[in-house]
Length: 350
Length: 260
Image (cartoon, rainbow over all chains, first blue to last red; front, side, top):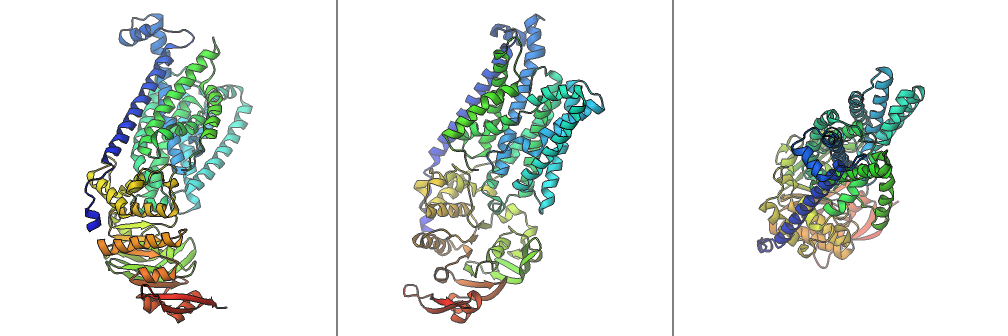
């Protein structure tokens, strides 16, 4: 025992504290960035609103034009953006962590095509016309598709699906559903119209009802994601090491897939396809957090929300008096940025 | 018996690799499993470490069926280091070793002073205290292997299973890792089971050798009992002379040629 007993005072203690403080500071900084993005999102639009009026609308609305714009349009839209951004950022980090693949995005589980197919079907077969109506169908479609993918991924091997079987099953199911959706919208002009806008990805025109519709799913998804973080840290050392460390691999994978499904399903149903955000955001968060998912997940959520709002604000400024859909702006600005990022520092092996 | 395999059948899918094998591991010993490629030694080690569930028979840890114990409780007593593990890029040595504390943590209580001291003890045992903040991918092969062993040490188990801990290491680094194993055994009384390919190092650093072929234990016992010329022929199809290691006095295998 002699050599061991000699070390009583861990020398790295101060350093560990400094790292912890640094991470909390980064977290606060990201909250600040999100707050700024949210304020801009409330102020900027077809009719710019000065900060004083925003304050007025928030604290003591008197029913002025600006009050109405802010309370019934801008705030719900911003809230949907924050929710979807957090959800997609966290879902993207979870997806890349579980698959150990830096190119994985939350759409890999089939949620995007599942939601699209269910929405188109509801418009054509049931004659659903309101946004509020077909979001429910989108959610159901996303959940059913990813449960199907999970079951298919499991059928190949014994026990928990592996990242490879999940990705293969997800790709196959997505391609199948996409073919069905394409066939359907070619037959129905109205469905085509809705589908086109949904596919581009947008948070415009989303009201309070949409916020309350997706909030419970995203809240449960976020709780599951946080519970998943330590297990995902163990899993990132490989399944055998995770098992050796006493982690139940099947349970960890199941919780992870459930969280990804709820988060990306809810945001896809509310805003359409914004999967690129889920791919990109973890790459922005990782240099700040390192490979620890307990920090990577919250950072990804905050960056996702700030990025989505920023892209939405840009979309409202560049095409006045109309606006560019946020999905288009995200892809147009995000793709070159992503290429820059990948060229500057080689993508991280997970 | 700390750890025991009783009439186990092991395999992947329909392929049976080990059938009807019995093996007991005594407390406080270093046991090394040897055998030709594909003889089932890594499979057996994975089963002993409950990474692979037997399709027949059972594995007992301190007399209790290991598959019926909560896996987290097992992880507090039994550490397993699989072959050639990989870590995410950018993970530092200290972070990796800290992850060895996983079984002692809950999601609401992530870090304690016990964890802190276990990690620095593990780092000092392996001589890595100064490299704690270095990313794993910047280390040499020998240092990286020592970092993984530190992770298993930080887990604080008195039983350790190591699957080919010296693979990809040059001879000096192999000796370094095995000297560390010997200290774990000698100074801390840990029970170690490992798979090794180098017979001479196996003979030098083990109390007990287990020779396997085709999923069966052919011989088990002290190195000088197991490493004999007839056994090498039977297990490895190898013609060899066995002489005395001039340094350690253990058997030293000098190959003559392969039998056809």
